[in-house]
Length: 223
Figure 1 (tube, rainbow, N blue to C red):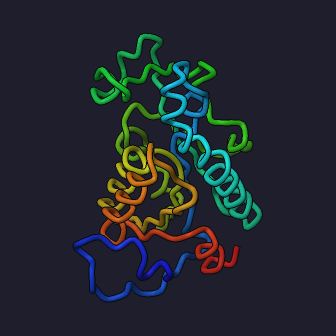
Figure 2: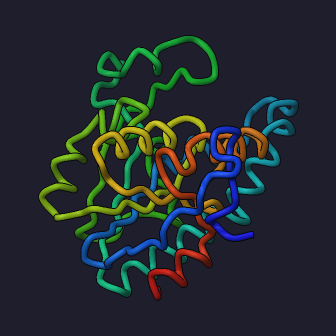
């Protein structure tokens, strides 16, 4: 099964196959969302550490190496690699969006200069690469990304990052609403569980984006 049949939700069962993708190098960028130190450090509580073990394993064995490889392929082909991360401008986090102030797992206080808010070393931005700092789930809503992409003549955005069902999905939907063509690379994303990851891909696929494997994207773009 290839990308034209995979990850179909209830709404797209039996729908016609999408057209072949045309992703010109001069109109396509790669954007990686929120792969930051805070999400890769083991939890203090042993029970929480065990609960998150599958996520950590996927990140270390699949998401990070596959994303790093794809970023390098973009760079070698003279294409732009962009980065976005969650961080607040103020130490007390007053500038955060409401969703990041609510109690619970999603409560985030990540001052922009603190170590846990930085992008993981394996995916660290290279010189002259754009890094966006956001206080919202969507990288489009919370930054000037829309203006940047329009100024650069971008039509296609290749997405990677975490979490599939949260900031990745929010960014995908925002980009689609602005009529950007969005590609989500399956192995370059992760959610808290594999079920959440797959379910969200089925929800957003074919409506807001196309979900491809890294090998499919590499073949289509001749990377």
